[in-house]
Length: 551
Image 1 (cartoon, rainbow, N blue to C red):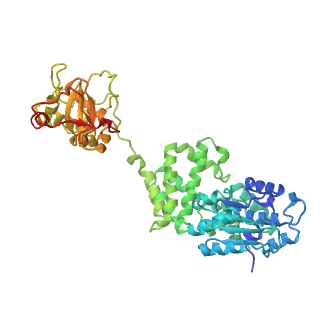
Image 2 (cartoon, rainbow, N blue to C red):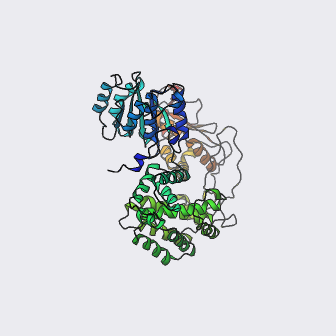
Image 3 (cartoon, rainbow, N blue to C red):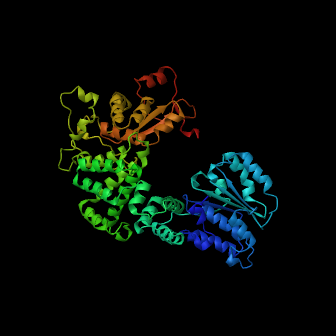
């Protein structure tokens, strides 16, 4: 049986690892300086070299070459045994198949045995994020303090699923997606060695389809090479299920021309010829991205064939930046949701149609300039009038005037209500506002507060007017909880503002707990003697106390 190319071409030396210099250089230095850690965590996308680097590290620490900088030598018995897969001290575990706590306990029991051949026993646990929570917990102590002869290398494609307790016990290395140019260079060199005849454009097509995974790219080339013929771009596109560049260009032409008949026809013709819908969506997004890079003066990053470059320039001149961003977002959504659609290509058709419908659907509402209808009329469309105002033929309008900042009261709460819809202030003689005056207007005050904040109105409904002294209104609550709720989130400020608006004079608000007996109210408190409180204290021997100093 023929060996797969990705296994045949697996790097056997640090220099052969592609696109991960930041990792390989660190690991090589650790070997040279004899500072190899007891546990490593390799994280990154599939096909980027995690398992390969783990095997190279295992080979390096067990290599018999005396000069550390030359490891792995690939010539000693240990290196050859490891390359051939018969090195007993390299244990590779697939965590996806060994997820239970019993599997980890078995590993933990065997790890104390000395190495059979080399200096170190190296455990490579692939897809380690698949372990159960109990398995991770069973591994923790061994992972933190393994025997001197043991090294753990954990590999994962989903680093976010690894518990923090495991992350903190490992030396972590992040593997990155491999750039297209590096993949193309490697495929060219390896194809020449294997005498695989491939057109130049095919390498770029394969590299783009691999999306940063070198193993995927080699597997695609292996698939195309099985024909034993010259691999042409047309053959590659047919096998890989991708559309031609001309097809993508024609679809973008239809987008710019706002021609739904042509665009939808091109999409369906591409699907009928065997193109995978998600692949087509990715190709359109890639092409639009190149146009975006060109418009953003980043021409060095535009990766298209030379014969396609003039079309990129042409399309960039016809697409505005907002249109381009909207098209990219629409087709990128199609790449994510296409597989879930019951009809092949529905996501592409919806993306194309959504772009054409954008000018009609995305017209912003007419802005309201400063010269538009007066502010006094705007709220009437959405705010009900006051109850008192409903009984009057026409509410009295008051011209808004800036109010002075009160030095003794909190900052005024800015509200959207307009003065022209609030009744005129109650006329009282200066300095003669009584609790009875507040009591008479209390229903109106709560209604006005409710227009700003229904929660504050509910708290006022739970309070009792207990007194008024020195323009400070005392509100009594039955529990500490209600009192504390009233004292936060601007509830007191809002109530004080409405009181000032109604009586045209600053009135402060103070909250008390009237059900406790921890202290008396202020002396000479202005109590309405004709009201309920006055009757209770005068005739029934009642006493009013507060709980301010209960703390």
